[in-house]
Length: 58
Image (cartoon, rainbow, N blue to C red; front, side, top):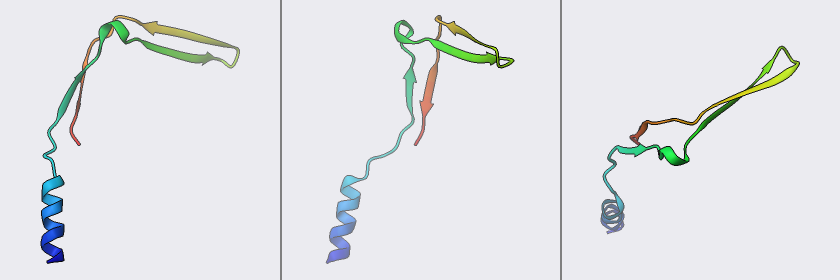
């Protein structure tokens, strides 16, 4: 009986895992980078026009 109850609970809570596709929000996305040049100064740069997607498949 415990095995049946446990199996029923697991099957009831199991959800199928499908890949999700996420799109970057262009108005809220930017890429910034910083690097140290020869240990003397820190340089920086950025890209503000970014687009793309990420597919997450657990």
